[in-house]
Image (tube, rainbow, N blue to C red; front, side, top):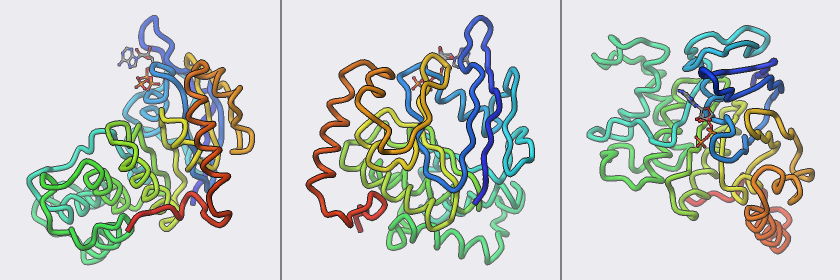
Length: 264
Ligand SMILES: Nc1ncnc2c1ncn2[C@@H]1O[C@H](COP(=O)(O)OP(=O)(O)OP(=O)(O)O)[C@@H](O)[C@H]1O
């Protein structure tokens, strides 16, 4: 596991300040990034994974500056960015491209270790039996699980996900989030996941970072994520979801931890 440090990060696009002077540190946790549309979540994740250069401030992994795209940082997108015409296995194996290089990947010279890692990752996301199925024949939720497997094959120490379940129905979103959390736990990866569904966030997050208008509004543990705080972030509508989630959690078995609610 590793420590991600975001230090006084600011990103401006011309006149627009998307992220302003945000600092936090996360270590060995499954952290959810919350905020309404335009709050700066994607910009924050893009600055961390090197897709966007910060205007000022810095990002560090275990104390080393994270500059540009790094194999230590795995990324899961809302749109799966998979090769639809080939199998789940080959898509997962593509994750090794970050480490082995394009030429080796094109000629399928991947090492045995990578192949084993691809199968292991597919098992982690519950898709080992579907390894040879074409991605185009899979559901949106299954495709996103292949995306998670691909990120795991990269063998990252930090996993970022930008709205990974935004395009899924609520049941599939829960399932995919369950696998994502399981994957982070099994592979001992620190994770930062942006979400807009508060009920799902509350169910899976171990810590919550809230952004509003590019500023850090809160950085809290689950028992501190109150409806009042969510109101500050989104307005009163979203707290309905949080209240429903809390009611549901109270009724469920005490031992039913979020990470365990994974469908086979
Ligand atoms: N490439 C860009 N050029 C100019 N402005 C941008 C660019 N990317 C983002 N912005 C602006 O920066 C602000 C933050 O956008 P960002 O996409 O980071 O927010 P977000 O919280 O991820 O929102 P969403 O959930 O809608 O993706 C917005 O005002 C957006 O219009």
